[in-house]
Length: 433
Image 1 (cartoon, rainbow, N blue to C red):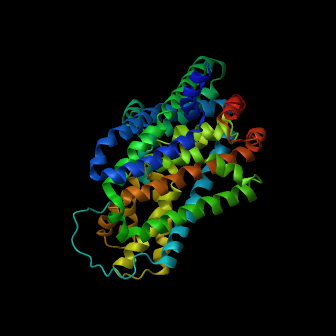
Image 2: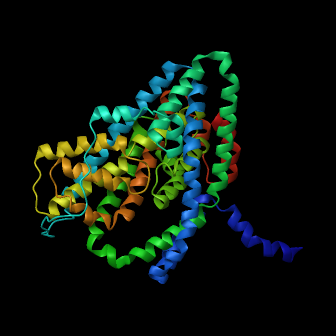
């Protein structure tokens, strides 16, 4: 009996580990293995791809069902509009602050100074920002089924909001449909939990591939850019977000930072705000006590329009490119960058690499060489890790502040948050209340 119990201990210890610790172990092992294997670590990439595909599988149904359930659970269109306005105002405001921090960091550390690069012809085509009216028109799906099939998150959100409001307005006749959507949403939450069990292994495969493909040698010429973006990300999360939680929400910021570990680890490795949404919703409800109604509405919205990390990255990279090519920017150029990046963030898809496309809009707007994209593209995957992490941390911060302002934050869960998975599991039902 004793011998059997002893042999079972290693597996049991791994099972008892919290998810973020498993993910951290996977990251560390992935970096080590990738560094040792070099380019041949490509063979491990399918492990990470499998995890990413499983996450992507969840996105559309999770956003659609969660939004409908969130809206119908409010049962008050005025309340929904109020929450939406609060969330959008916070998202846009924090995005403007993020790009200001990025510009400030790049101005202080001057990562592009001394490169003395000269603009030349480039194969990378500039992306033109669509007119505002066209952006608004594109939000309305001509075919909702087509939007669901193609994964157009912004159109899905608009359709889900419209359907949710309609269900809330027709009263008793909507009850069967609402119960169906609630059941489907619960099924998606359970499927999310099952998929997240693959996270440590997927993270291992992804990190091994990144470390093997890029290596330290590739990062050395641009290590200063990477360092400035990562430092700016830490400042934005630890100082700015925590400050808002403390001063506006009157809550313990340490609790908020602690709850970020799992979704931040997923965001860092998958580089997808939409892909991290399952983990974000789970953490907001179970560890921060955000109500089902608020989390189901605010978080999917944030995964689409809240791109603080992308904005911060654009600020650093735009100024880096200006410095690298010896171009002096006027005060009006800085203002233009802030406004462009803030508005462009609304249309940035929450998928890997989308920030690089949006950066081209910023460069074009202020007349910076589009060739700069070729420089950034080489390290974009590494920078994407930092900016995606900032994005989802901002989503969770806004969900907490909105829930607190609406009286829908379970303080017992927030204040009694512990590091044990058992307590989190016990509190899940209270979080959904």
